[in-house]
Length: 335
Ligand code: KG4
Ligand code: ZN
Image (cartoon, rainbow, N blue to C red; front, top):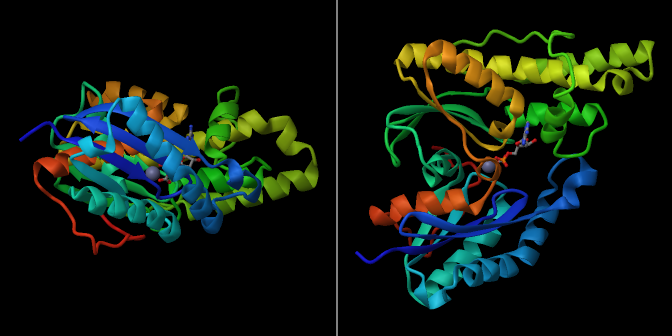
């Protein structure tokens, strides 16, 4: 088989991204972030679709030119099939289908959550199979047992909000712009994580729940603002550090439980929230204690990007796992 050259497109949420992978090595990863959502406190689906339409051609053009190739040299086109926003997914899917049809090359549909996990294979060292991956993003919170690049099982997940949502919604309550997760992370660096305690519900198994802590946080702010209207301003760093510590503790408790149960000590984290410094620090302390080998993706591969779609597509290309042109986006696609 000749070296596969694959163009990958990611458009599941609010990042339009294109990447070229040649023989399993990533060549580039072009990302256009949509700032249009900042003032709305969350992603507005219709605005996301329109921004994808605006960005998709220039982004792909840039990826092709930057790689020093032509469209005719592509062996396959890959796209994010789901999960994600339907309108946003449609933009990437339609473009990928048209390109695959016009070039008469295979089309590869990729699961966004599997791709977050396989982002670990963009770099060395990468985890050995089987490994556990805590996948934490704006829409998902999962513990996945990864047996191979194609065989994965979700062994725990959130029963309500995703942890990224808990970060973003709490940030919104504090008057921070969207997405608030990175801002909480930044303020938390200066704060005392033990100052305020936000207790969590006890959920069975390896599952999570973040709706309780979100509500508790809302009442905490309301009560304190009632006593002192400058409470948030005067205590921002400590509030952020304490909230972040509570959320991270909830994640790591379940990861520890899953590792003890499965006896797997190869541990990875993935998804937007894996960029969080509090999570990275507390994970490395726990790893030392539990003798885990821990794998943390590069920051550019934590949040949404096409490089991870390309990596997943490379594995699928080797297995000839292609889809036909009648394929449709799957907003609720599962692992
Ligand atoms: O994986 P991702 O880019 O998109 C989804 O597939 O959802 O994740 C986005 C989420 C948002 O909730 C964002 O606030 C969160 O990741 N995030 C962070 C950090 N960077 C991104 N949360 C906490 N700390 C960060 N440093
Ligand atoms: Zn994502």
